Structure formats: structure tokens, C-alpha cells
Image (cartoon, rainbow, N blue to C red; front, side):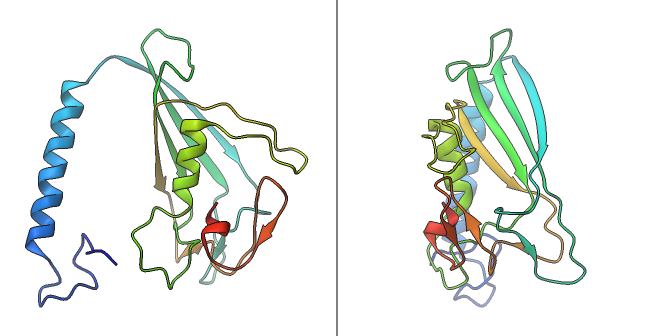
Length: 178
């Protein structure tokens, strides 16, 4: 159970651990310095797809049920290059669900299901055993996930998720997150 960045659930009067904040701030400065030094021209490729609801382990935990099944992605490619694993600098994905498939009892700092999305985008996927799940090549670069409009609480908790082999997982945990 690590310290929260926003000061929630921490064992201090203020809810903030100054040493942790100093470390986070120094890391942000280092990251931005490196990013500015590595700037280069790029081309952007944007796409979106509507997933539907079945098998995507999402529900709105509060009435009324409001859910966007739109996944949006932005691929960042070196300027003038054909998109490939070698020319892609990164992929940004936006979807509408809290990353909490591991469950509410989890006290480990984890990226939950976005970890598996990142691995798939950066390294590719083998074909799934279930029909309609072909192998997918790596996009390349670094993948970043951002939660979109999560409303009252769009969550994967208490709903089944289906994997590429056709297995369904209702119980919270890493199998479901994958």
C-alpha cells in the first residue's frame, strides 16, 4: 500500500507525506527535461471504435446507467515515416472505465487492466483460442492509457470479462484484469 499522491488515506494529519511529494516532483522535472530534449516532428494517426458492451466488463455502479463504448486511440509516428513498430513513438488510448478489475481489497500499487493493454500494444498479442481473436502485431513505442468519462462510477467490478481464449472471469483479480 503506497502513499497516495493526492493525500488520501495517508497516516499524517494533513494526508500528505512531504518526502513522497518531493520525490514525485523531482521525478516530474526529470521526466519533462528528458522529454523536451527528445522532441522531434511527428505525424499523428487517430482512430476510434465502438466496442459494444458484451465481454468488456463495464457497468455503471450508480443509476442512471450511462456508458460510452467508444475507444479512442492516437498513434504517434516519426514525421514522414510509414507507421510500424520501429517508427511508432507511442500510442495513447482513452476508454471509459476505472482500472480496478483487481478488486477493492487490492492494496498493491498496480496499473490494473491498463498494464495488459500496454503490454499488448508494445509487444503484440498471440492469437486467442476463441474465434475472432487473431494475432496482433505490436504497435511499437510507449503505450499510455487514460480513463475517459467514468460518470458515477464506470467499473469492471461485479461483471464478467472474457479473455482472448473465451474464458470468462467474474471474480475480481489479475486474471480478470488481463
